[in-house]
Length: 211
Image 1 (cartoon, rainbow, N blue to C red):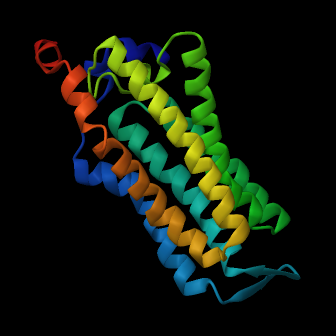
Image 2: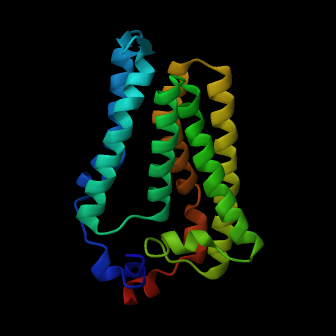
């Protein structure tokens, strides 16, 4: 399966952008909607009281697994980031439900961004851009461009990890849910928007089309 990455054309099947976005962001939106409906409710299950947040988390984990499997089935591949994100969702979501403690799930974004930032950092220490391995097909850049973007994204991931820790520890659960659903997504979008100048300077459009 991993050998497919050396020949992306046959391995990665094209699907509708709408379907792709629904599979990637649909579970997050459903988590947000379900939380708003159940946040003030308490459920008695097997003699144990569970708040709405825990119930929503219990539903989010299998939904995320299902959507990821469907995406893999349709496209024929998953990125390393998608796989690692799913693993952390299952682990930390499962811990929250098992111990009936929402803190585990709230720590999940912190662990994801620390992991991604740490991996990029290790590559930088070795003089390599691990980001290039993941994203080269989407936006071909010169070597120097990849190193600059990797350094910036590494720092950005660590910044998101700190922000998540501050928000879930110091603010309400509802504030954290809004931050997780909209804040993190908007932050990623704005980050790449601010890199437009870098893409202009170091982009390889002509080489990308020739390939």
